[in-house]
Length: 48
Image 1 (tube, rainbow, N blue to C red):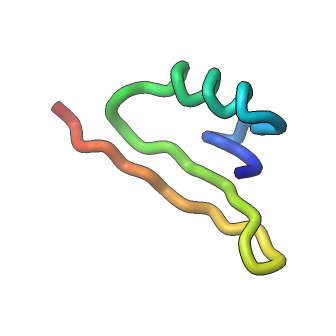
Image 2 (image 1 turned 90 degrees about the vertical axis):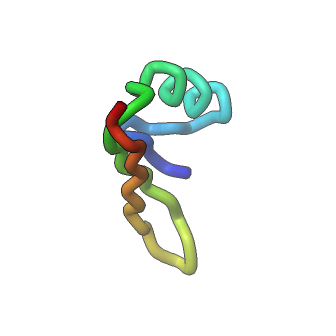
């Protein structure tokens, strides 16, 4: 994983911190490196 909502995730600790700081509901963009290129995924949680 490269970025979570545009913020760099250089370590697992970064990912844990950013994940904990993200809202429980809504949409986040996740950038990953796959197949020699960067891919952006969108994760959406239902609104209460």
